[in-house]
Length: 425
Image 1: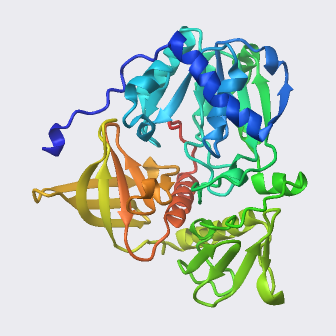
Image 2: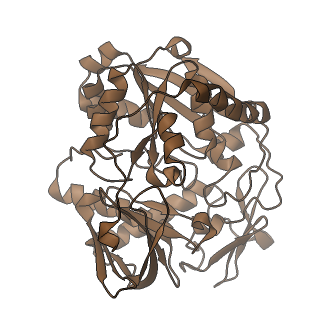
Image 3: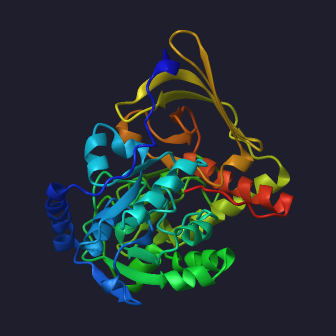
C-alpha cells in the first residue's frame, strides 16, 4: 500500500565531502569556467573567507552550483538540495555533503541539520529562492533568513550570479544559449559580529537588497549577444497572457517568435533579449520581466476582488515519498482558489488521497515546465514526508498559480496586519 512506502529519512546527519569526491567536483566544474569565463568580483574580503559561514546564492540554472563550488575553494560545504535532486543518487549526494529538503515546508529538522553543518566547521549553502527564477529576476525570499543568520552566529556571505538565466532560461532548458561570459559577485555581507549586532529585520532588508538582480537588464547593459535561433522557444510558459487582447493561455513561442493564437499578434525576441512587436505594431513590453510583473498585477486584482480561481482541473499525480523513484498516484482534480490548493486523487485501488494547502501555509510554490519531459508542466506540493507532482490537463498556467500563491499570501499578511516567523526555505 502507498501508506506503507518508506519515506526519505531527513534526520541522517550531514556529512563532510568524501576526500575522493573533492577532485571529481573540481573536474566537473572546470569545463563551465573555461566555457563561460565568469567575471568574478570579491567584496569585503570574500576571497579570504574561511568556514564556517552561511552562504546565500541566487538561483537561475544548474551552473549556479558549479560557480559556488569553485568559489568556495578548500572550504568544505553542505548544500540544501530538493528531494528530486536525490533520485537515484542519494548515496552520492549525501557523500558530497548535500542536505535534503522538501520545498516550501516548515521543517525544523533542516534547522537542526544546518546547526550541525556549522558545528562541523563547514559552509551552509542555501538557495533561498527555492526554485529557478521564472524570468531572471528575484523570486520571493523567506522571512526566516534573518532569524537563521542570528541563530547560526557566523558570517553571512552572498553569491549573486548574472547570465545564468539568459544562457539557460527555466522556461526552456532543452539547450544552452552559449553566451560569451557570465558574472558573479561573492560578498561578505555581514561579519559574525555584525550578525550579532543587527536585528532580524535589518538583516532581512540587507539580504533582500543584495538579491535584487535582473538577468535581461544585465544582458542588455553588457551587450551580451545571443544569436541562438530558438532563443524564444518556451517563453510562452512564463508569459501566458496577451497584453494586446488580454486573453490568457493562448500564447505560443517558437524560434525567435512569441505569438498570441487568439488575436494573432506576435513579437520577436532580439539578440539582446528584448521584445519587439511585428509589423510595426505597438510593443507593450520590450523588457520581459515587465510583462511578467504586469501579469502579477492582473492576478493581484483578481485576489483583491476575491475572484481568483483556477477552476477545477483534471490532473495526473506522481508521488515522491523517497529518493528511489516516482510513484504514479493516480488521476484526480486540482482546484487553486482564494482558500489555497485542493487536490483529490484516486489511486489504482480506488482509495482517495487528498492534499490541502491553505493560503497561510505557502508564501510561494514550486512549479516545473515540461518536467522530465513526462506529462508536461506541473506544480509540486509538499508535506514533511511526501511530494506530489501535479500535472493539470487542459488550458491552464502553472506560472499563474505560482504568482497567485504569492499574491494570496501577501493579501493574507495584509489582512492579518502582521509578519510571520517561519522556517521556510
